[in-house]
Image (cartoon, rainbow, N blue to C red):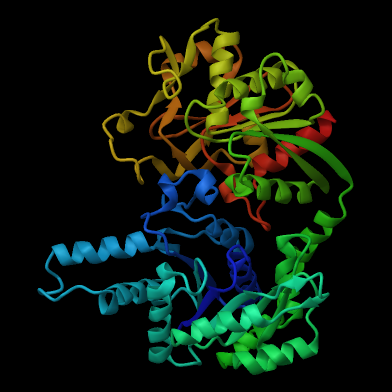
Length: 534
């Protein structure tokens, strides 16, 4: 069959959950036997989110092929258990960059380059790239922002053209909108949705399905009103009520028959009833835990929850496997010092020191590492967290009092964390770090090897600094070993302490590969260690 295309737009407000709805629909289609993928189109002019501050845009998600992408791609992978790639995230910056490069190369033969047709043609080309591979029955494209935004206009125009070219049985539009509840009037209001759909119609696009975010259930009279004034059939008005967890949403959409409605409009027959046994088992364990632990998440971007999105989700996956409720206690590293560390961290059963950039908050992270090491509390360090563990060990156990990371102290006499050789000549920031998946060889008998049950793994990276291997012999002599090393470069990927119940630091980002159906083994083992400690 030829590939079918679904476009998901948003109206009324941002942050309604287009990514979760897209991922949930893709999950249901996958569960019915169709191959589906999702791509995100972001209207901002940055080429990718790699240079954006986490306070601006939440975490930067990294794919196997080294793309720095929007955090929604994390949702896509966590729901579908299928890796995404460079092709799954497109920004206005990428679109304009490509068009300008073509213009400079003379590919437009001297024509005036305009938004229509040149920008919209490039958007349409990107819409169809994944579909043209032949790997997918259905491609879902999530359009960032809300209808009516100036930045989104070229994308909406491109959707209008694609609908006209492909027809209604090969292309449909799902519009996610808000039905606000006015507590003073004690009623739900449909007018914002009506205005949002009118705005879409003004651009020449008629939505096929309305997905309505709401705090309260929408009754039949509201559905009839929305169907009448928004020009959709009543079965295409879908309720998306607030859920306890994002992982409930596929089952809520199943109940609302979103997948059935989509397949009917595409004139497709389901290959079988949706197979969601594993998903339901996960939800059962998630909602009925037998144990409970408190895990400290020590970071410096806590003001925005999305800054550590993948770590928080990885804790949910690992908690469910262990039938354990994981209470994540977010603690700002700038508020931790050697004087108050016992008071701040005393009630925790495990400590994770989070990734980050720059020197702000590093002293607090180092104090945290020392406390976890000396008090034998399960410790997990990721990227900068691992580097802080190395610095702390060098200062405390190797008697290198001025040991530091070159990122934090460029004049240190003992750069136990050094800039990678290939990074030293780089001046441009965007897309120039060590990015994407790299192999790692594990030492048998170590905690890492026991967690993975394998001696060769592959994990995703995003860093410029690394463990300085010139100091490795000194570290290993004092009990901190390299339990994982890149087989080609010798780069130290994982460090452990021998005489500690669970003390592991990793240079890569394991949280990026944790999914509902494949929880990350290091997170699973870490939570198990926290339960044992408790």
